[in-house]
Image 1 (cartoon, rainbow, N blue to C red):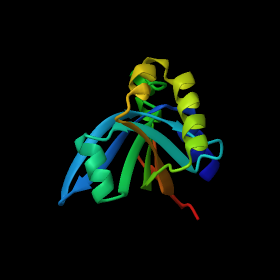
Image 2: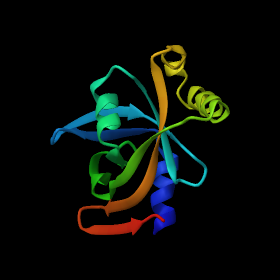
Image 3: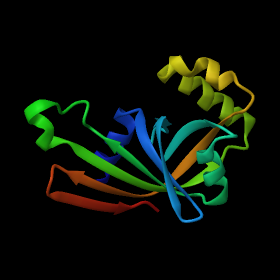
Image 4: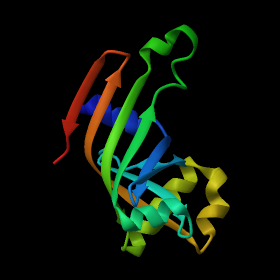
Length: 145
């Protein structure tokens, strides 16, 4: 089941990022890429945003990734919703940051100008667990070591 969960992460590139500051939740629609193993998710945000401030204050996050684009009309019963629990981490290594930036531009060319902005920060979410809702009744949980 964990491979199916990782496949959902790797096959998609949009998620909802949920952060919390002072007990108040905040959600953001985000473009992302993942590593090859499905253990880290990379996102980019301007450092002056509410979401980035929330991440710095409280690194615990939740992401929602789903298959609604693939399952339209009568196929909605087959939508899979994957909740990813993880931890915000900055990327200190300039080589790794440049590598991720180039992968990001390849997957999301519409963000090229944004990624060149000096205030834009690429960061990582280290995945701690998955919860998959497969259809309306079947739920599965997997912890990542």
